[in-house]
Image (cartoon, rainbow, N blue to C red; front, side):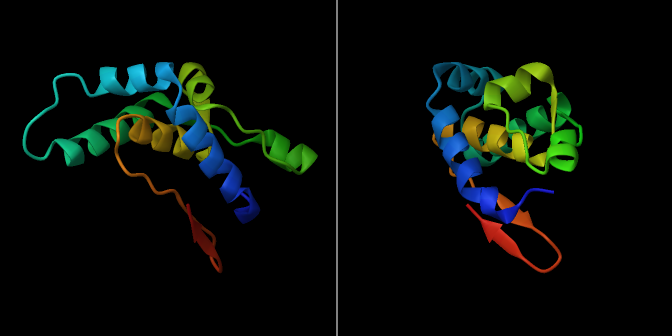
Length: 116
């Protein structure tokens, strides 16, 4: 489970990756042909669906064995097709930000929660 202290790092990674031209090209490819009324909502839904379809959840064993998370870039997560929540969430945020959508990552634990 992501340490809530890692939230600023997740936000920084999403903003950084959103400026990558390859991330923007990927987002535009996913959104190809989309325009008209309701396009922003449909764009968000398409990006979410693409990430859910592409990225298989795999627990980060380094968290268990070394006591710290290994974070992948948005493109690395997309290309390898797997990661945990702190890989897929910044990927989705970066895709959204790269095409001008607002993005919010919400992380919660039973007794604590945070948003970026």
